Length: 425
Image (cartoon, rainbow, N blue to C red; front, side, top):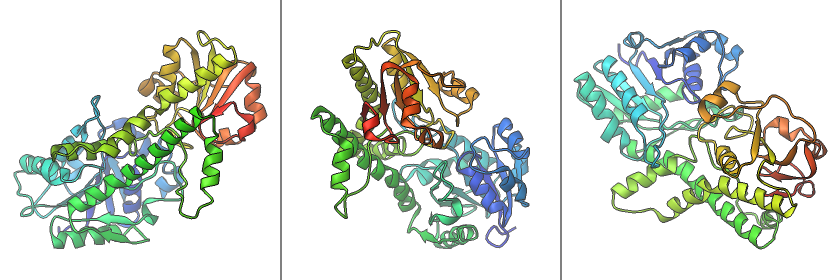
């Protein structure tokens, strides 16, 4: 069966990226969603998505989508789209293990004429230099002769109900001119706002990794400015409001930079640049600044407590939010943990409340026992760490009622009026 004429799509990896993609394709083509996690497959077959990206109604309405953890069920497919995570290791180097394993899996089922497309964020060259040789070795087929490849970087924004797979411009690429056109045509079946066909796979890879690197650098600049203004006893919020009156001033705010994209992807580019003999100065410095913001916040909270004659040891501190971003249960690379770890290491007692996050996931991934309810007059300090809708709906007076006499409120996310908090970035 010709994949260009009769596409039968397999999505490898059903997380925040893979599931929305599978649902979109399942509305117009035969699509098989594959994941090695049987529990994930079971919940999706039951019509539930624990990532909250897809509603039960959306899942039940897709007629051409099936879910499986059985590799044999992929053999009838002819287009394989890989959407597995690309994390970093303890040394902040790319960990390509999930990508390599997914490539081995595809190599075990791919047939002549098939196309494998990668969506996982990588450094320029990774698809052709690392992934496709694995497919070749596993399958015994020759790349660009027996099978072909494409790269179309994911642009999913977890928790964002406005920007979805179908209404975000899709960058596409292919290993030959013909395949490039075929990959582009495939995505045009689901993307209503159009595509951008890149000149090569490397260009498409590079375009993705610099999207998040650019944001990382901009946020790092504002974080550094916020640190400077704190030393100068100047309100960062007031400074940004004044500077923002100029038409071309970029509206970034200080904050924690976590998640699976902005806090990770720049390290992939740094890695490749260093292999090429160049050490990126700005990108590396930005990563250091942003990775240190959790420790910075904890230090500023403890400084405010000391000024208020509140002892850190055995103090009770409430952290509102654990997820890496608002209105989302995603805990990947959440930098809120840095704040908690720093406070606990100073012998404070820290409670964490997050209505979006599963208690089991918080315990499993972060070692955190979430609390179920908020108790008035209980805390020496409160840190608003995530801008969940539930927290935005809380009045400043209510949050203040959770503190003991003399307790402080530190607002990372700027959700409370400036006059109602004791500190913010």
